[in-house]
Length: 306
Ligand code: CP
Image 1 (tube, rainbow, N blue to C red):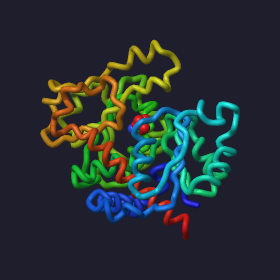
Image 2 (cartoon, rainbow, N blue to C red):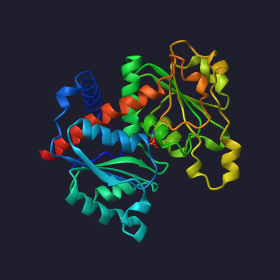
Image 3 (tube, protein in one colour):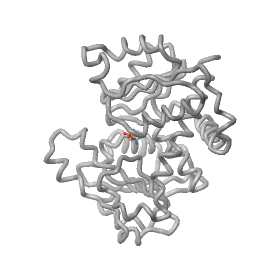
């Protein structure tokens, strides 16, 4: 059974095929309107979500399928002490495919080991968020025209931001991709990303504190929110939360063709006066999330039928 736990579960060729399929879905939605007739998607979300859960549901409905699930641990039998493994065995009887979000790193992987249906990691703690990465790659490829030869600024909470970890993992497979890691000292990328991913693969990167210093050289700026839910104390969060605020004045330092992405939700890190700038593509990015999740559901269900 094929699952998706990390972007690295897909070869570069498979990744390209998935993005091609997502582009075709975008152009020809009616062609796919009945592709999943009779199929059910379970969304098992033990942690809050707007985009990921609803875009998965929208994706399955757009494919002609149906959806069921829960949106918090409190509204499931997890609140009575049920393990993710047991829950997954049961969900396998009710649905054809499952998207799971969980605050504990590795929980969707544990669930997948007991599943008889494909399981998709919809975000596990501060670890990985592969379908956000697919969304990001589709956005970059569609709007920038390429995934190679890019200088990418990743800004904000690079320690706890799982979207950043997944995106770095995926992008190192393309040639001449350079990273500028912009964060306060306390929120730098974890050592396993710096050592085992960037240094191990000889990827060019530098670390900076000031966003203003990085902006002029970027093809792409990926802003992230400070992940309040992963902090051990509120004081540290309050000290860090407004460390970066991208506003119209700072944006004047950036190239005219630099794209601004953000996985959303945004808090204060991008001022609303940036939203009308043509470089701001974070709401388009959320739309691409539906197409790529449609492509993923179709691909995994097809593989499961083999
Ligand atoms: N980008 C993202 O994962 O958003 P949600 O937390 O709203 O799903």
